[in-house]
Length: 218
Length: 218
DNA sequence: CAATAAATTTAGACTTGTCTAAAAATATAC
DNA sequence: GTATATTTTTAGACAAGTCTAAATTTATTG
Image 1 (cartoon, rainbow over the protein chains, first blue to last red):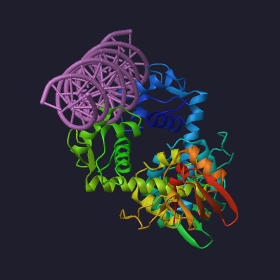
Image 2 (tube, rainbow over the protein chains, first blue to last red):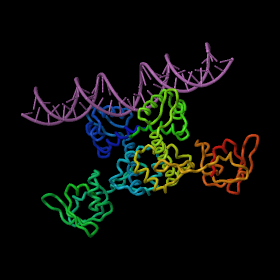
Image 3 (tube, rainbow over the protein chains, first blue to last red):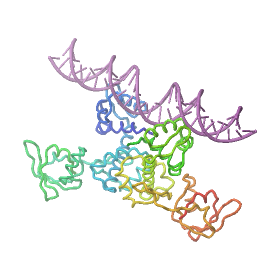
Image 4 (cartoon, each protein chain N blue to C red):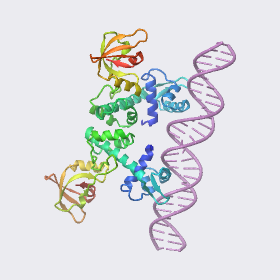
């Protein structure tokens, strides 16, 4: 079944807002995420329910069906593969690629997606460290830890972020907190939770608890 | 000014049907090319005329304005660059790429287009030999000759086709009449115009006048 | 050049996706 | 546990793009 661009965007939103399809999502949350109105969302939810892509009970929020989840995951796969392409091959900054990938993800061709993945070396994570599902929709099993949950003295490799705003990404870039860097947690300040890191065994940097929460290490 | 996908497709059609924007194009021709109805075309022509992208007088056909031509050329540029990407990098066959490029061409980002061009080595022609306009909309000046207009004994390099149907492309592929092959015209048959070629100084092949007309050499 | 044929445009309707405003259902608070 | 606030849905309208059928314009032809 071929979905419209709009339908794809709704499925993707629901997937992301529901923590990969587990919990129910509210109409208002979707409206907010898609910059549209609750009434528009209701209309679309009925349509997606008719197509058996979501489970929808009026006033009770929605979850994805197996079919809907499959579709959503394939969109996520396309999005993240294109992000890798844009950063690795076209040398865009990781803070510049989201909007372009948002367009590219809607190009419908399984052959294209699979060949692109091969061309990129079948990456398992995108430039933000978000996991790329494989052809069958499976995510590699990994255990990212947010920096604010590391113990003092322990080390890790920066492997992802859980906040994708351009300003945060640029902040990270500026302080050289990019993917692949080795960090060690030197100290956690009790009163505000800010943490002091040693980056690549050389540079010391103190960041807020808020920032630490959104940097993931492996 | 940002154009809708549909508007882009109309401009592209007009550009192609008008021999790169020179001659006037009929409503019916556009309807035919876009698989739509004449009445739909009329509606859209009014809209494009309102936006100063075409010159439109009812019943008199249309031509592109300078602005419309610029837009059309940028779509053609994107389309052909993506075709190069699909064939050179993802190893698609030249007969498989049109539909995918048709989708990719509508991704709106000048930065993407320019970086893609750089990544591909700023090619001047796509896998079918069609010229790729540069960033400023200029086509490289070349003089392709259709095989049916070659003189007996003369040689050339296959550099393009003027017919893009999948069946024709597959026919060429089967007979090894692909881009870059050296051919010599051995003989033209008077009564039906079919021509006998020597391919890469080794293999002889006779093709119809119809086929010869659509193979371009340099 | 009148009559027919072909091409084009208009009129009115339909679909998709959106919106505002009002109604209904659910959640919260005293 | 009733009143208020919040969330969600319904009702009706609108814009983009399309369609069919009818009307109009242009082209063709005897």
